[in-house]
Image (cartoon, rainbow, N blue to C red; front, side, top):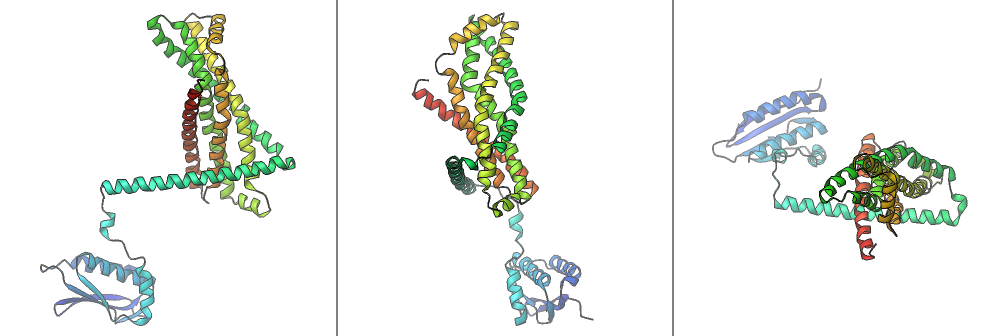
Length: 383
């Protein structure tokens, strides 16, 4: 029967020697681990401070990866105390294994201690975030280019169109979203009119609540509410659907049989959302104004005919179209982000959830940034 691995500590002149022998294999790992921990606890630092410690591997008869790792753990623990540690009499046949295990040497204890970030850590974190942002922006522009090229191929060859997929996505992103968009817009209209009237009442100008409501919904609230709801509802659905296909290797199978995932999966979703979001914006405007009209009638005693007359005077020129113009751009951003994050899903359910959350956050952020850009552009043209 092979001799089990063993280790003992012996003084050697002014030095300390740890003699390791026998078979240091995985089968002996529990016993060796207990012996090593006992030796590490017993070997307290000397009063003289640094001492020379030898680990004599001459009696070793067999060694595997676990045994090599245990020897290196002992060496690391002794070196951590400040001792001068050396491995002596190691057989040449064990040297490659020990060198390989040394690449994964146990981490020092100070790496696990709590580290309080300083200025250098803050600068490093900001730099890493900036690099990640630039890389992500570059990948996003690359994906936009892929979608644009795919759209060009489809438009140049109408037989490549997928009308059933397009109409199906329109159903999911349009009529199916109308109840939640209508309800929230109606309630926001009530709240906005009530709060606006409370402030305008101080100046005896309650009638201008209609102006406030009409301008706010036509220019900003209608399209923003619709875009945010669609980002949370349809954008996340795009990511989850495509991400699940990625996990199940359906997209790989699609590529194998010669189908372009961007053309099959992305274009119908992008096109459907570009068509439906302007319609949802118009619907949100109508429901928001109805909510405002209801609160004006019941609370401010502004009947519907007077409300409509004041609204007609307030909403003039391009005001109605300013919100509608922004809707297709918001829709493209939401659909592109949702599909891109779905294609970036790794082969795990955890990745699906993570990318879905990231999709919603990125979509809402980019929609608000894009809305700010439109506000600046419209201001330059006095719209």
